[in-house]
Image (cartoon, rainbow, N blue to C red; front, side, top):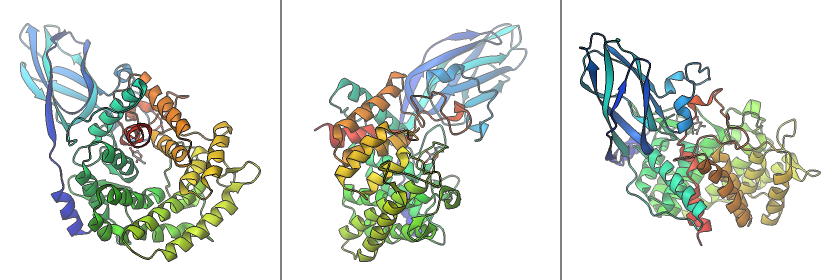
Length: 481
Ligand code: RAM
């Protein structure tokens, strides 16, 4: 732990803006009945409910269930039979006994939701439950509303949802999702920061998050994939090959966006250290296969082989390190030599000259993740990358299932000059989410599989997820002009 850095992170802790939203909708419920309340948009905050009773005196406790939903299909979704592999405790549900009515009930947790379903699970037959009003104390650290962007109506609609997503995830840190996991993850931070520079420009929040990661690096200098800030700041014991490396472009982007050279100077040694640590996973400049690599994320597609993508992420991040060091006036020779070796190994080992695509692992899997990251790493020329992505679109390739991976696909298309195609992919993919009625963009979205979830059950999926907010970045940076 680097106490000085964590003190700086603390000094940058933002204030939250509060907004009170009230619903004056009176509902009278008998035992077993329920009512749904709609706040009209996605909010993150604390709920207070005014309750009373009608009929005979309250001769038994009122047993009430609250269910908070980010999207309308969740209202009727079965959660009782949840058997996913992450904890059931993430389901946004509460059961409360009220001994004395009337009362004003403030629920203890912070929820992410648009809809609240309140069910009178058990009452006595002598009285009914009255819900008089609901009040929500909504919180965010996003400074203000941002002007919409986008050339077409469809893009404007996408931008509106993307901005809302980012805003909701901006709390004391950039959270990955205000429903789950409610914490700072490096891969998510990188994309949020990119969208933030084009929109809210809350750059001190990015700086705070960079300090949180840097200040919690372990004794070897390894940066964790995720940081907890409650009850005190602590790194998670999850280290991911790609996320640790992505600290480098996150720092570079920050320095470029803010011109805060001093932070670059302070953190570059730790950033470059991530390459040195990651390099231990290479034999003769080829990264080890998925099963021997530890967790390299890339996407939530559970069938994805990560070997080729990991090699490309390494090269991409090493190139970011070169750019950062050049900005700071430092020597880059050794790094450039490393990049050359790893790029050569990447072509020798992973480029299939028959398919003319990158393949990964012993089964030579073709995927978007491998080829998109290969483009981002720029081991081939722009013209060759453009052809590669055109071939990929018609190949039988493992597809992305998250907006996180789609972001990288759109970026790769832009980088190699296929801007129009990038725009179409963006409007089709994120537009399809808007068409499902999204107020915020989802953690997972596979247009071909509405049940998509890496957790064994989609009840714990998050529907306001940081890494999906980047259309606001793409539109403003590339498509508006
Ligand atoms: C999900 C988190 C986060 C992501 C990690 C890898 O569970 O919500 O968004 O960065 O996985």
